[in-house]
Length: 113
Length: 114
Image (cartoon, rainbow over the protein chains, first blue to last red):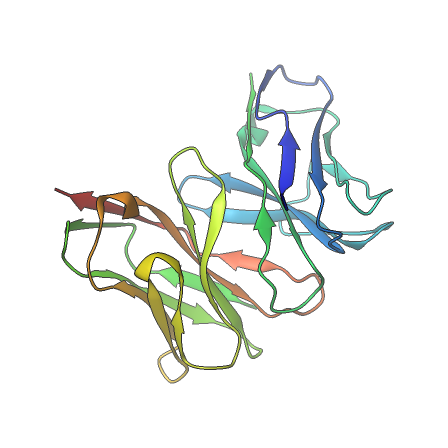
C-alpha cells in the first residue's frame, strides 16, 4: 500500500531533550516536506526537500533540522525542544515539484513540557 | 506571495442540506488549488484539485469546487450533507514553483446536524 508513515504518533517530552520524528514514504517520491498544524493557523511548512541531499527552509524553520540521506526518509530533528514547539506535525510527499497532490502521513502529536 | 482566506471558521448544516465552504486566494502565478479534508484524529486527505483544466472540478464523496479567476475564489460545495462529512476542511494554494510549497487556509470546521 502506498503510504507515508511517521513515528512516533504521540510524544511527550521535556524542554531541551533532543528528539527525532521519522518519516518514510514508499512511493519513490522526490519531494518531501514537514508541516506543523496549530489551531486557527492551518498547516505551515517547516522544511522541504526536492531530492536526496537537497533541503531548504519553509516558513517556520527555527528550532528544527532535517536531513535527506535516502530518497524514502526525511526525519525531523528538534535538538533542544521548547514548549512553543508543542504542535501536530505532518510529513508529506509528492512525485516532484508541480501541481501534484501531496500525500500526508498520519501526524505526530508532540507535547513539550 | 500566495495566501488563502477561508471566509468561515465554522459552518453548521443539517443533514441532507447543501454545503458551501468559501475560499478566496491570492497568487502571483497561475495557481494550483486544492481542498483537503481532515477527520478528527486523522491525517489529511485530498478531496479535489484544480490545475488549469476545467474550472468546475469534481472530487470524492460528492464534493465539487468551481475556480473563478475574476473573483479569485475556489468555493467547495456539496448538494446534500451527510453526517460523515463532519470534519475540518482546508483550502490550499500552490504555485508549483521552487519549494513546491502548499499554503494552507486556516480551516473551516463543518458540523452536520441530524
